[in-house]
Image 1 (cartoon, one colour):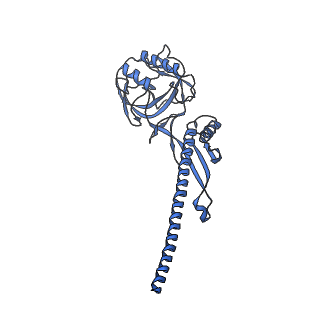
Image 2 (tube, rainbow, N blue to C red):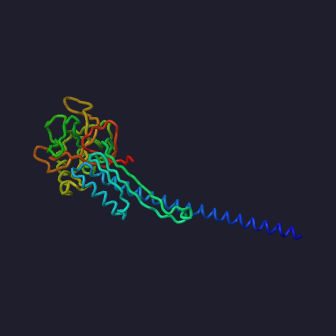
Image 3 (cartoon, rainbow, N blue to C red):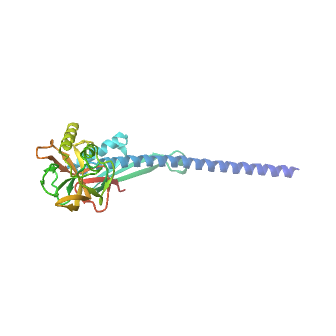
Length: 300
């Protein structure tokens, strides 16, 4: 009987020891899970901020002053109260912005393993690409044979007669008709245009409709640096696709350009303005010609 009692005492002691070891193991695993979740959440938040800073800064890569890009990156970082995490900002104008962040995360349960903190890093690189697909285009087009000098004044021909034959054209994006053209010019083309698309030209009289919408756009914006300024229109770039009796009936899209409307439509039936280099909402597409319209994408 005494031997049996001693056996039970030894087994109870072993069970208690095993239970203690198992409990410590579970606590360690739980601690690692908690610390791991903390690291994951910090990494995700840091990456989100880096992405936002790089994408926002890349919007101004076409301006002349690099300090404008850096200012925007700093503003995004400050908005998230993470100035202390900023490690480096690399800017190559007309190409990319790279933002590097680093944060030191204090651990809780992992300290029993001698790990007090872990450095978390996040890098984001936003690059420019030639725009080859886009929504919201205006029903005005320019030939890809036209040499663009950014900042120099151009006159988009919409009246009767031939100003510079083939260099400018009215496009029937939503279909024929002056009213349809007016709505498309005012609001932008509702569907996506991309390199390679074949578009019909508009042969009707749209001078009055153009003049009306041009004046609306001029009245709506006085600062061309505003990102949503309606005086800046996205213009399809094309090459003639089908001619009939010395008139272009269809064109093929080869790219996009941005045109800033400077003045009201004149008596010659032209829209005065300048072509500008600018980023906007769109996508890159193989074969798109570079006419100053760029999309932004994360490349790292």
